Length: 506
Image (tube, rainbow, N blue to C red; front, side, top):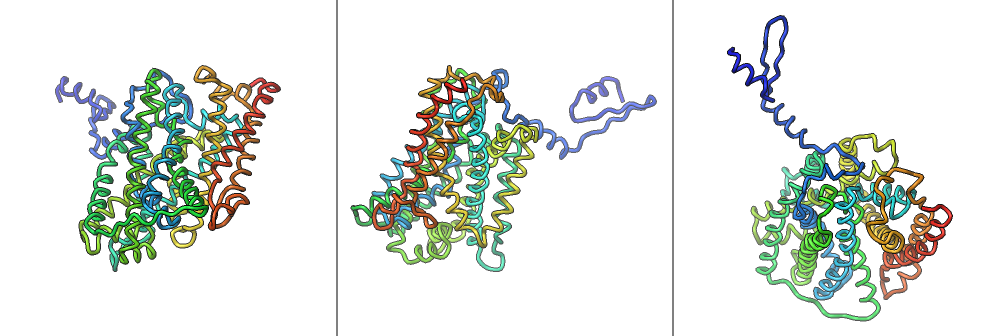
């Protein structure tokens, strides 16, 4: 081998050079190994420690907005929209008003806290130590872990049901396989972390949006849509509040993840641009999918086929009925598969942020690499999904609806701290992010969380629990759990926080 050729190959990253006893051996890497090494080079290894200004790589605001655009352009948002007519007996117009109002209310916290990630380079659960108190933030980190797994399970089961109904017969996709497909796809993306997640979410909305447009065309062609009668009174008011609670819970569900996906934006990025870009990235898919879901549900009144599939197979059955029989047949089945895979985009934030929540819970857990927490989270979702598919799916849905109430309490406490006690970004010292002696203790935060829970208990209206106030709103009750929870937490926190600062000095 010539000297020039040897030096060229020695410098190449695709070869390994071994020299022993005057003998030189050049060992080329296999294409597969080169590909794996290339992927691992792009995997994020950083955990909950602050992202420094030197590490901020000039990520685009468009990437942050498209992240939530894709995460909400999914069948889960479509499913929320169907609740208005099918569960709460609201007409289409009433559903639209509820969806618009409560979606806007829900996304404001997500868009607002996204600016904190760029400003401080801190993950949301670490920021919470400043805004809720050290102890309270760790309680919320634990709740966040449960919520991440729970929503992953609920979403995975819904998609597995749709995959199962697509090819009925001997070659039907078994539930365990459907769950494996969804969790496997989620794991592959979340394994590599921040950069790959943003790349995936930047484009994954496109096929989902195309399928939803196909559903619009099918509904228009079918001609079964009707607005439904306008009703009023206490019962309708209760139904509006209950539907609004579900809409708010879904829209606000990303609040405790918000800053996780903007930490690599430069500190000087305009916060108003972040806020309004995120508002658009959240609101358009939420409005579109939920309103379309409400319209599809209104078609069941005049279409026995739609109603039959919905009653037997829930939202997955309704989607199948719209796209496949007496409609698009094979192409409709393909569209159903695409929609079922849309859940991956929705589950990705859950499975990425679960690792950060686990690391924020307790310092020894932060020593476990983020990648291992991602593996554990996806494994938990897979195992629970397969079991819950047969016996516990209704329980899981009810349980996760209840988990959603804590978001309102979180917002009430954190916004109070930011505006009334820290008075803006200048009131934070990010060097204290892990210093127990400098962070707020959390007595006011824990007290507010407990009292907010009392407010939720008296205001909620669920099948397994009817609060003393909630059950008195109309014939079937009305859910005002998140409103009362936020109100109680806000009052108690603002009463106790000055005393905490006075006696603890932080």
